[in-house]
Image 1 (cartoon, rainbow, N blue to C red):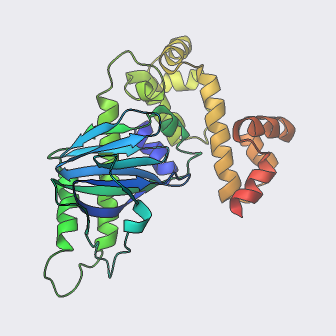
Image 2 (image 1 turned 120 degrees about the vertical axis):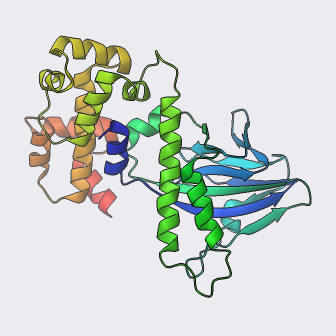
Amino acid sequence: MDALSEVLRLARFHAHVTLDATAGAPWCVSVAASSTMARAHLVVDGECEVKLSGTDAVTLKAGEVAFIPRGEAHLVGNPLDAEAKSLSALVKAPIAGEQLPVRIGGDGRGTRWIVISTSCERHLAEPLITALPQIVKVDLANTPVVDGLLVALGLALSASAAPSVGATAERSRLAELVMIEAMSRYIDWLPPGGKGWLAGLNDRYVGRALALVHGRPDEPWTVERLGRQVGLSRSALADRFSDVMGEPIFGFLTRWRLTMAAEFLLTTRRPIESIAHEAGYESAGAFSAAFKRTFGKPPSVWRRKRRH
């Protein structure tokens, strides 16, 4: 397993098609900010622009997708200064599994675009979300995952007497594959010599270490043990990790163990002392102080409020 796959798995990454729309110029849609949902815009035909507050507009052409990973409010349209309609007002719940298409805008040049919504446990996806830019733009033209999604959407418009069984689940899985392909391509196309978590994924040794830590977080990792697993000495891995990631490997390990501790607090009834020990802390007090610095709440409050 690679580190990206492990983070997406642990964070319970999901996606679904929210809107399949054809828009004639002039048109504009406003998307509200969300702390639980991120949006992506995939252009099938035509073109449009996507803009976050305080940033330059990004132009999308057929086959391109723009992903806003942190869920900020934004506009999408052609042109962006047209009167904006709210995305929430356009979304229609699927009927018997069918994703009904929507038509908006005027009589000008048409654009077909698909809105994909994603969700995850953000505290578990933090390495990925914080490393991505505000807008991730990727060209997915003629890729099998996009072609598959368009075929699945097209089936909803067929003249079949009954909706396709499992159509909603199929579209969701295809939407997830589209987003995973977009993130994978963005990471693969990063120029060499970068720093941070995304650059670490592309490094032969650091990427392996990240995959091990993310994939087997409950193991008592040490720098020496990780070095043996990836094929470097303890000092060589420590130096390489610090150079690529911009932080010591032990600091990253500590932060990820706290992240997993936050997950254990939510998904198990284990005593806080037991979780603290597994995270590498000798006392619950030291664990509580470190946890509060990272997540803004003591472990007991985090567990109670998040469960509620």
